[in-house]
Amino acid sequence: MSWFESFVLGLVQGLTEFLPISSSAHLRLTAAFAGWHDPGAAFTAITQIGTEAAVLIYFRKDIARILSAWFRSLTNSSMRSDHDAQMGWLVIIGSIPIGVLGVTFKDQIEGPFRDLRLIATTLIVMGIVLGVADRLAARDETGGKHRAIKERKSLKELGVRDGLIFGFCQAMALIPGVSRSGATISGGLLMGYTREAAARYSFLLAIPAVLASGVFELKDAGEGHVSWGPTIFATLIAFAVGYAVIAWFMKFITTKSFMPFVIYRVLLGIALLVLVSMGVLSPHAGESAG
Image (cartoon, rainbow, N blue to C red; front, side, top):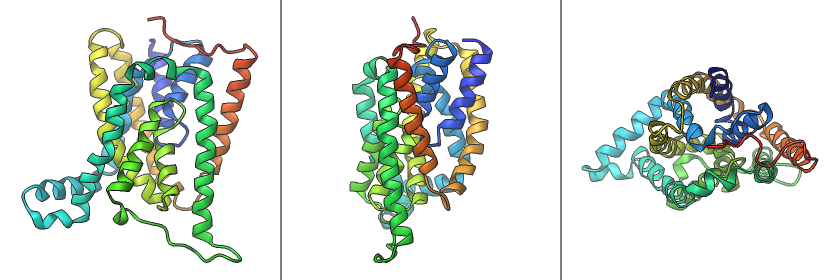
């Protein structure tokens, strides 16, 4: 991988990680359209450490508060009813599905799941799911001629059942094209949470999963499967761009609909299917030979 490739891929990772459009799909598509080798699941996992570092800094006050309450709850029973302490446990519980499924389907994630036809399909299907979820949220928030405004749930109402559902939604993002934030936010909206609550828990839930995945994949870099220099460079680019994107996104969702992302996903998925069916792109375009 050249330094220019790592710069572009780091930029793509940072721009797309927190938006509900799938960073793994865009890394895959960038390589395919540019005629580069597929950067691979290991490169994706490691550069995601950069974007998760942006989450750690952006939500540093929330994270510090949750960690403090959680650790105190281990020895102080009166702290176990504290919302922040409970959030610590809910993040752990919600991380179980992606951990189990990630290890179980590791070979598929790094192989068949990166087929461009599958990516196109998941872009379209999950785009439609996000659109439906967003429409339901908008209906609750605005009401209508014959419908009263319905109050949506905050994170204070999050329990073990919903935490696990969020977790399984996050695990769907193991398939490129699904989108971690897109799947978890869609799941949250369908369960009745506000856009801000769904997005905030989505970002917090991603921290242990992404960091664990990145550390796990570091062994591939050590074995020569990933170029250290370009990968670290891409990770730094992803961190800087990702921080700016997350700050913008958290403001965007308080007043705006997800429909622009829905339209983008569906159009991109259709265009990709057309290009593959016409033979312009191979379903395995950009795949690494190694």
